[in-house]
Amino acid sequence: MRTSERHTRPDDARPDLVGARMRRFRTERGLTLRGLAARSGLSIGFLSQVERGVSSIGLTALNSVAAALDRPVAEFFDDGSAPAEEVPPARLPTHFTLTRAASGATEYVSGQQTYRMLSDRGPNLVLEPMLVHIAPGGRRDEAYGHGGEEFAYVVSGELLYEVDGVEHRLYPGDSLHLRSNAPHRLYNDTDEVTTVVSVVTPRLF
Image (cartoon, rainbow, N blue to C red; front, side, top):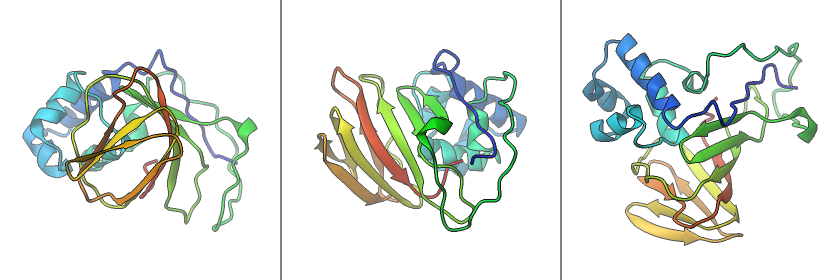
């Protein structure tokens, strides 16, 4: 059983919402874009585009920004509405979680991508499994490397996955698994939504 649940509605998750939060948190810490770039490993130009709502940012890159600003990733999506009703905490086993479809799922929207969390939190678990819907078009995120591993399995649609500057086109049933320190980015260049099962480490939320 999850201890709390936050839902981000598509109409609240404007493409510029995450960027606006990023700018606010950065200025509150007295950081320049150059300072945030140095701490997060992302370029000044890309961070500027995200803050202005010109580009979106993937969850793994946002995780580095959040760490640099000492903020939880979830705070970049909070729309300021009333918090979700707290569910009484349950005693969780240390070795597994069980997530029922009927319990609902938390979703986060960043630009062209909607992330649906597929697993409740587990005290000693490190994987972050997600169902990701990637809308067509939009701007390509900046290629970015980070710690951990990343796995993507295409359920429907097509996906361009660039690793170390080489593009790989994935179709339904195709998958890709990499050490995430290799610069990588993904993009949907078709006219339809692409759905991907994605598993990353470490956990983002």
